[in-house]
Length: 92
Image (cartoon, helix red, strand yellow):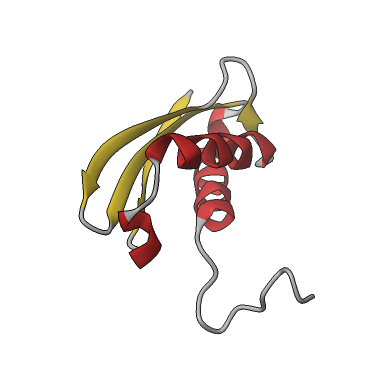
């Protein structure tokens, strides 16, 4: 079953960001999430590029239809930037 969700980056640095440089890490994150099928490979599409915001559509196939809600949640958590209260992974 295909699954699609949108990602947005409103980081001020994204004004200078190269969308091509961002697509590859998002694809790698998608491949690492449990329940995502690696065949066909995840597909990340740039859907919007405005001042300070890069919008992406991450399209993946999942292994089991019954798991789609959990897989979608895991994808969102895996691709979300750390929040202000989150520990810096480089420090821990």
